[in-house]
Length: 368
Image 1: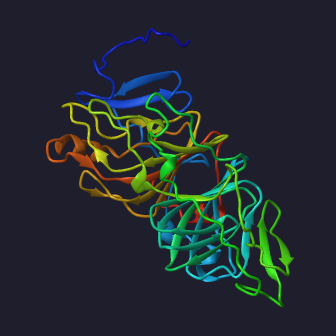
Image 2 (image 1 turned 90 degrees about the vertical axis):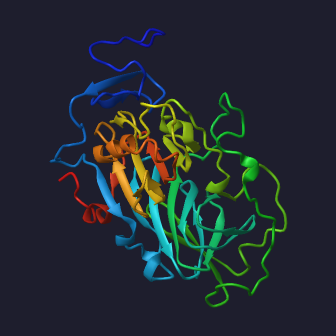
Image 3 (image 1 turned 120 degrees about the vertical axis):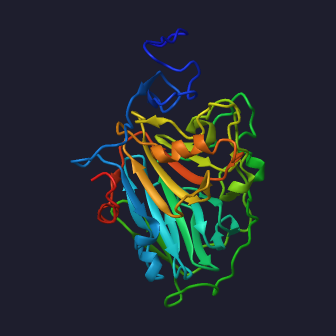
């Protein structure tokens, strides 16, 4: 049961996640990293296993996946993972949409991995660039016009995305909403933009869909708006990373936005932990209450390049974590590196995620 007393049995280090003396640090915790925990100190790497059955880690390279919008302007993003709370999709568009899109099953939060361009929205125009988060409210009409090929990781949440409650550091850490770019209304005249026989298509993306609505007037004709539900962009350069010198912080310290059953985090460049003996990489864990998706945007981990566009899925209950050789290197190079410059986007979900056939067909098979 929960208690202010935390027991210690057998051979354990004095400090959590530090001074392991050859042991392997493995956390068995509830509620992500915020509930009851047991830190187990093992002899062997708990991720050294072979899997038989559907519940296994999956690793795919994003550039090996083929979203419909990558080769056909009239196409749509590729569904990668889904459950009752969300869908995780991949888009790689290089031509402007010949239609207007409206996601009617939930809010849409997208991360721009590569590319730049313009989003025409009902709230007004939004420029986007690599490193941007783009928020489109549920059922908001928009159209994407890329300047260059644009790769987007997209998360559609059944419930609305929200800014996490302010913690002890206050309302601007780690996510300062005042840094968001918010559009001004700019109604578009009739006769401008893609039309078929004088009509504008608004394509509704939904379960069992899509459905198309056809308007004879331009659907982005909003002259003004007010309220607290609007589209915006937010670049990871403006994210205030929370750090610690003496212990590697859990993923929850890097929370960006959340919806019911869906949590989105930014792992971004930061000073490395400086107290000797401190582990500088996330400890092994099996996150028994959440599935985890890691999307590698770029950077390095103590001199080891992070593969851009790698998408990794770790099901709840299955051990995962940085490879042992990466941990050993971080210890060996402790005095050589004062920073970690990784850029990883994480999506944790309370319900199990179902991988799509396309993802399963492109699994790198590292645990087969």
